[in-house]
Amino acid sequence: MDDEIYSGTVRLDPSAMLGKPAPVEEIGHYLVLISAGQTSRRIQIGETAITIGRGQDQALVISDTSVSRHHARISIVDGEVVAEDLGSTNGTFVNGVRLKVPRKLVHGAAIKVGNHVLRYERRSKDDIRRKEALDRELADASAYVLSLLPEPISDGPIQTEWQFVPSTQLGGDAFGYFWLDQQTFVLFMIDVSGHGVGAAMHSVAVVDVLRQRALPDVNWRNPGQVLASLNNRFQMDRYHGMLFTMWYAVYDVSSRTLSYSAAGHHPAYLLTPGQGAVTPLGVKAMMVGATPDLTYPVESAAIQEGSVLYLFSDGAFEVTSAAGAQGTLNDFVPLIGASREPGAESDRLLRTVRQGARPGPLEDDCSILVATFA
Amino acid sequence: MRMDTEDLGPRLIKITLAGRLDTPGVDSIETRFLATLVPNGNSAVIDMSQVDFISSMGIRMLVSAARSLKVRQASLSLFGVQEQVSQILELVSIGQMIHVCASEAEAQSAVRSSVA
Image (cartoon, rainbow over all chains, first blue to last red; front, side, top):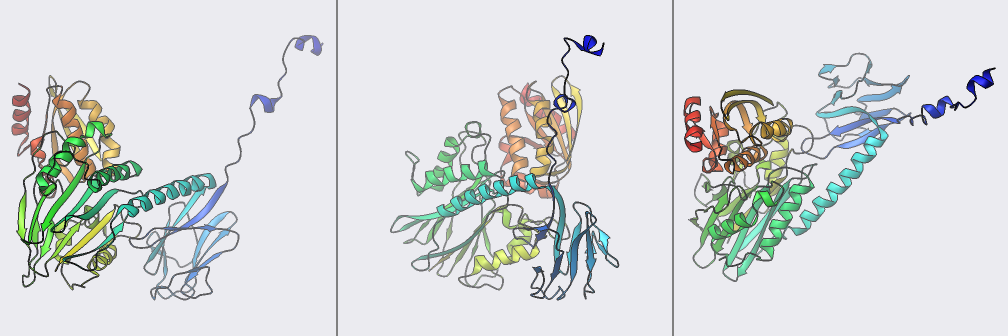
């Protein structure tokens, strides 16, 4: 009877109707160590507890006197991740609350150990693998941008030193300098709006044009002409909506004159020996690519022996502090020339930027170029 | 980032922005911002009094809208710009493409006269 009823009927295996069961998503537990202004480190929490402390026998060693030798432990208990303090001097805090007893962590919890913050993440292992693959590609792109930057110059009429720290997403900073002839030195910095490989590719394209001097009928000694020509060449509607700021200067060794112009870029600053305050070298003009046929005014400054030029991107000052305050150019300028360390100024400034930043990698590319005139 | 819109008449819209016009802020409103203005060629007065930060991404969003509107004979005016934001807009000479006005009435007048 049943056979007749079902004759001609296709019987389906329930598992076939439902399709193959979806693979169970493999979940991992991770701690992300966030250090001020530095790239984060991700550590997987496994069956063995992660002990944290200053002691060399700890699974995660943090060499900082704010951290006790045996400070805290993170372990998995019944499938849940638990944090506990190990009697540390300065305490362990979860989301701002000091631990008195072990506490379960939820995704995103911030664990403060001394002056350091760890974030707990419960994520799919596939997510992590994709993220790591993307990070590797961004690191490759960063290395490529870095390879285009010029070597520091340690002798001659102009000495240079610089720092370039790409953000984790990679921004659009680039800079460079070159001799046009024996008497004429060019310096420039650009910052493409936005982040990611697209912004970096655009900055590379612009740097390439400058390196190859590939602007027809342009007097490279005239900053206004260079910017105007770049503006017409790199109109945003032809380059995926990209705009960039730029500061460009030409130094004439014989006359000791620096001619400069800018496109939406904040000023560079000149520190002249014997003068207390730095001098802003700025020009107010539209970013490159915004609209065609712009003109860029040219200004000039006399350069004395021992003068120092500071050129930096907005990533050096648009930094959020640990307290959440937004940094501005006015916060950064007083750092210029303060406690000056000849030959290591860019390094000193970068350290200061990092000290003032909230934990984690810098939000934007940070470029600092220091040129000293003999 | 918050964005509110209000019709002020034929092809004229008031947009109130609140928050930070940085990368996350722009990501959260850019599509809606451009869709509100560009396809219909609507001019806009933008209340910036609650915008306390603007990055190059924010400038890019405004410039991009202004460019697209220009070919549709429409324009943008900003008003109520906070001091810190004003300094940045001045640095990039935004006034070459977008009116920056002291009051809403002045902003409306500026876009109406540029469209007329």
